[in-house]
Length: 435
Ligand code: ATP
Ligand code: MG
Image (cartoon, rainbow, N blue to C red; front, side, top):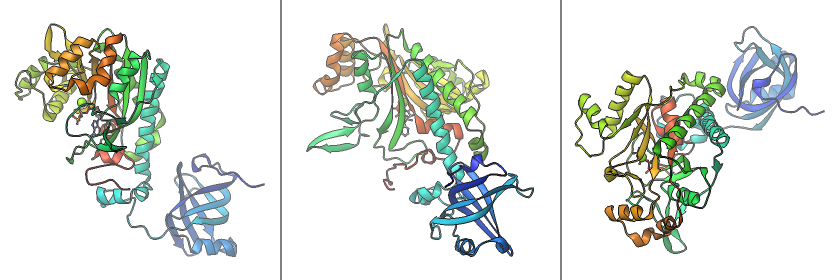
């Protein structure tokens, strides 16, 4: 009977097994040939005793090139010399696909530039450390989905191609839509809002957004993924804040529980944050910043340096790496946010920050038609071109809010790795659209 494949993580001494994977190291020591077979689950040493080996196998072994794909059938034996404690003594070795000498050395992340690594991304991923990043990222999503589904949030899919730019501004990718201009979405938000007006009460959308920002920063991608959540009949933005906090907890707990090996490989520790996350609000934030030695004009936007300073302050005072910023100045936020009735300089707009870097923006949205129109006018927007969105607010829109959390941002900050591009399989940057 033909053996079924066993993942290297499930090998037990004494069993006859069939394993498949990549050859990651070959050593030829006189009478012995060793190689490490690596699959998606770990690795195992394969030891060939030349004097016991059949001719066919010796031929295969003599041609073994690093990173070739192979099938090995053999017996798992205990071995004191190997840290894992087991090795495979093969009966047969078949080369499934031979590899040429590699253009980059996957294990030398430090010596190969990130650019060159990304040019050869599939080979770069052969480094288990790089794969670990994506296993962790997937678990972050799993933890978030788990929480959202348990809380009755429904997964929905909203359009990526927009007939009108959602946030305005220059950083939109234009596409040709049957000869007419269209745009790639910058955020799935407006359609989430329309879905709630339709009667879906708790939804989430996981998908890409695009930003045509030409700058090269360590925190921006031209294409990123967001976990976008929206809920109806909220009392105010604090209902949204509570959902987001629990979402983060669920994600961090999932990684902590399921990614022990991956975290060890990367030399990282995950600290599940304390709740509630500190909630900082404008305009008090100006005072905190002034105490920290940074003067921001009352009513103005803060900057990335301020975000770091506030993190310092939060760490000292609350021992937390997370904090929310609420009640941003309306003038720095889009037309659809809800302002504070009676104090309209400030909006019910909330950002989540982690280690001083923005992770999400959201808050309560304006659901009253007249206010939306008033705010669009204040922002100098063309009311006609907004009508596709605003018209629905005339027909009973529930008070609602939500947020969009950047997946790569969160992974990047959690793992504290140099550049956000490390957390994206095939990153899109101003100078990169291949592979
Ligand atoms: P930033 O000020 O950091 O550029 P933003 O305020 O422009 O972010 P939002 O429109 O609030 O971004 O988008 C929601 C979230 O999506 C952000 O908080 C961030 O986590 C993520 N995000 C936005 N733009 C990018 C990008 N270019 N690359 C990676 N993630 C992004
Ligand atoms: Mg933002």
